[in-house]
Image (cartoon, rainbow, N blue to C red):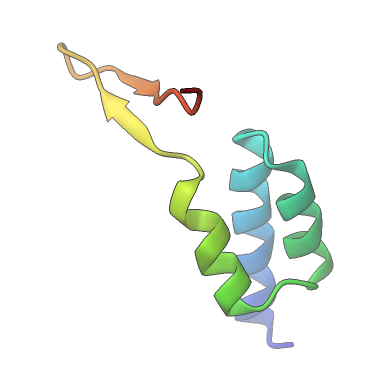
Length: 63
């Protein structure tokens, strides 16, 4: 695996861990996730809405 891809996976893993997606973060950090799985996981993770005054708040995932 090239250095650029390793760095990309590590930064992605960090973002997923911050969003509470620990299993996905572990897979990315270990290099076990391919690009298709990474894209599918990223679809729903980390969605953010901006508040009335420009502040950011996470979206609710519960129904």
